[in-house]
Length: 120
Image (cartoon, rainbow, N blue to C red; front, side):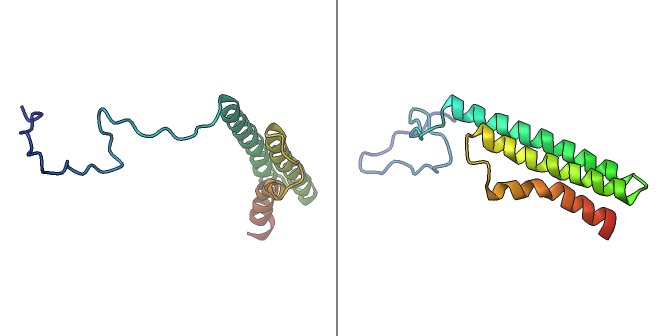
């Protein structure tokens, strides 16, 4: 019977409840939410970009196991193309301008791979 609380006097203020806790009977204010279409765009662009970037990472990993330096460079160039393509796909899904600083993020897999293959 710990759920039952004694009645409080009329002049006493109600107990302060922490904002991060839910109070039954007092729903939180509804924030402006995203539409289903917006959420779908974000999910699709995230999946497309991560999938294509994984392929770029796989190409970098394959380049690390090649014998010839020329072949390694060719694989890194292809990985760079796939990395930039991943960012272009994400930008196109959001119907944004394709040319943006976000395209530089597509260079990361090949740059990291180049560092470990040739510099590390």
